[in-house]
Structure formats: C-alpha cells, structure tokens
Length: 263
Image 1 (cartoon, one colour):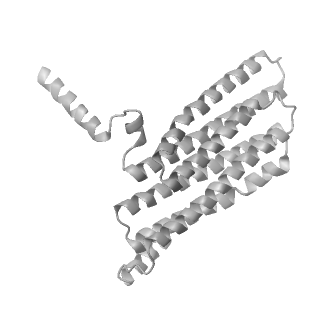
Image 2 (image 1 turned 90 degrees about the vertical axis):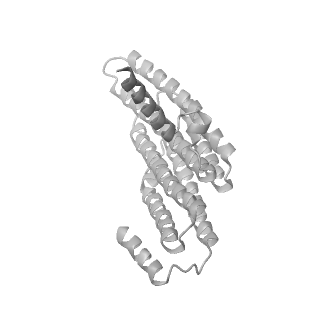
Image 3 (image 1 turned 45 degrees about the horizontal axis):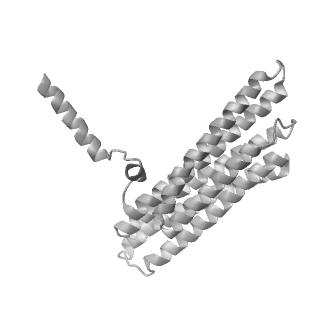
C-alpha cells in the first residue's frame, strides 16, 4: 500500500498536479464503493443471524468465506481515497470527506468481522439443541442493521440530524444486550452440573449478543464521522456537552495554576 501511494504521489508531481478529472468524479466513485461495501456488510450480518437461528451451516460458512470480499472492498476504498489526495489535492472540505470515508470503511470492515464472529457462533450452536427462542437476538439484529443503514444514509445525505439519531439509538441496543446477558447468566446458574451442552449454547449466545452490540458501536462511530465531516464538530461534544480538548487543556492549566498559588 505504501509503495502504491508513493507511486501515486510521483504521478501527481510528474503531471504538475493537474486535475484532468473533476474532484466530483472522484467523490462519486468513492460514494459508489462505500455503498457497495455497506450493502455487502448488511447482507453478511443478516445472513449470519439467519444461519444461527436456522442452524444453517452452509450459510454460516458462506458468510465466513465472503469476508475476504469485504476486506478487499475496504482496500479499494482506501486506495481511491489516497489517490484523490495524491492527484487532486483536495481542499479542506474535500479532505474532511476523504478522511471520514477512510474511517467509515474501517468501521464497515469491522462490522463484517462481527458478522463472521456470529457465523462462527452459528457453526457451534448448530450442534446442540437451542436453549430459548432467539427473540432478543432477532431484535438486536434488526436494530443493529437499521443503525448501519441509517448511519450510511446520513453519510450519503449529509444528514447530521439522522447521525445524531443513530448515535442515541446505540443506548437501546446496549440495554437489550445487558438484559439478554443477565438472562443467559441466570439460566447458566440454574443448569444442572455437567450440562456442558447448555453451558456451551448459553456462552455462544452471550458472545453473539456482544458481537451485535459491537455492530451498534461501529454504526455509532460512522454517525460521529458524518457529523464531523459535515459540521467540523465532534458529535459527543455537541450532543453530550463533552468538554473539547482545548477547553480541557485550559481547565487543566487553570487548576495547576490555582494549586501553585495556594502553595
């Protein structure tokens, strides 16, 4: 990747940094790649949970095998973004777009990894009787996939209100994950000694809840990237009233000075 980027920089220098193609063309190409990657990630996540619920080993293996495709898409997005920096010399707003995309692609790739994790849980669970109807898992899947889709829509539409909505929705997913984890732990505590099958399935479902909760975290990350890309502000600082870095430094300096004066 570094050698490739260096070659693009050399190409940019050799042609005097000309913009033979408008930056808008680069942007449209990047948006298309992100859209394809987002679609593939949502399909992988949906299929992984279906394989868990139905005990579909073939579908689970398909999700695992297609992870390389998602990884390759992330590489394609990264290369396109780096090429746009090397050749087009984008201005500040375009740079914010490029850097947002680089981070969004990383989050999408990690969502793909979580889909693989769920598929791996499905391979194990398929060998044992299911403990309980997967109502909570189904609900978490619906919320997490919708979060990913809405986060991407906020990106494509530059919709910061929708980005804030996704950011807040993560709390709902966290609550369901906590409730499900507590229920599974109680079930494990009530199981007879030696019930290895029950313990195994409960453990795999606990891990599945964690994987889906992490999907929500990554969707929330995407919403934060969008917010900063559009407004140049950090979502947490605006929505939650978090103290900005510069303000934290000023506050720390003031406190240190106060302590020095007291001495």
